[in-house]
Length: 105
Image 1 (spheres, rainbow, N blue to C red):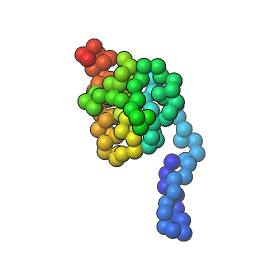
Image 2: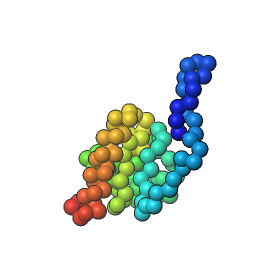
Image 3: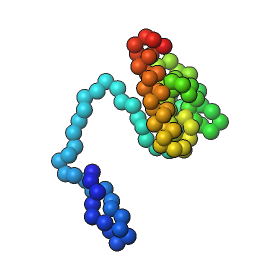
Image 4: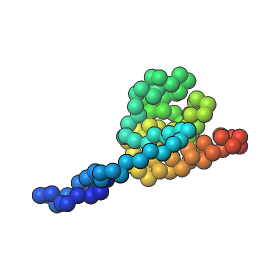
């Protein structure tokens, strides 16, 4: 995407760049989107604790949830909040995931 020309209000909107698509081979995907928890996650993930607001319960220091090997952060844990908080949670979860995968946890 790139920013297009300003419209009548002066706002520039994203415009698709044709041919810019690409694929990345990977073993795992870490989702990071939305402003509220997807209810399907808790409904389809046995052993994942959620709170009364339907947010995933996770350790603030490393993102570990009640299900071994599953980490969460950002809006899925706190509900709608700031990008800065989500970025901090992502950083903590990345450290927790690294420690988990390397056997340090």
